[in-house]
Image (tube, rainbow, N blue to C red):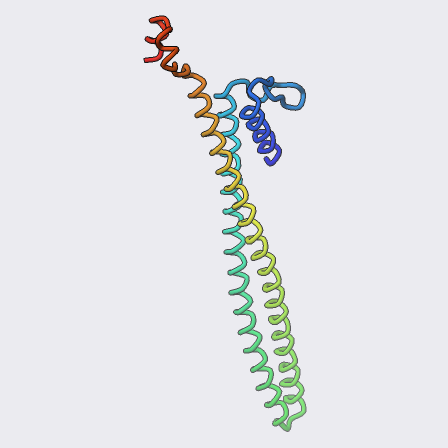
Length: 194
């Protein structure tokens, strides 16, 4: 797309700065745009392509932001779950230390260790989700930045298209006659001017 924008911009610059030159060519020798209206059409198409890409990137950014927020929320849930498991592990460990029966003490202690493992897993899940969330937030930021660049390019291309339209309109109108030319002009020329 950037190549198309560059080609369109070059074609426009050539058309505006040196109208006596031959029409700019695409690779392979095909004419890019031979008339002002074709040039306007091409530059307008380039602007639309830039706008479409910007819209795609804005959708990507919105999705990435939404996903990042969901991951953050899930990380919070996992952290709360880990805290709950840690609290339960402490309770089971305290209960195990206060029980006299060796079998019960062993079972309660084993369950306390299992709860600590659950808590560790949930903390790990939370860290991973936060890491992933950061990646999605960064992706959203990049996509927004790129979308802005495409919007800016589209705006510049629309301005170029407007200049081309004005040039085409002014080229289609015959030049106005000066007062000296009016005095010596044939009647047909005066009718064409009005």
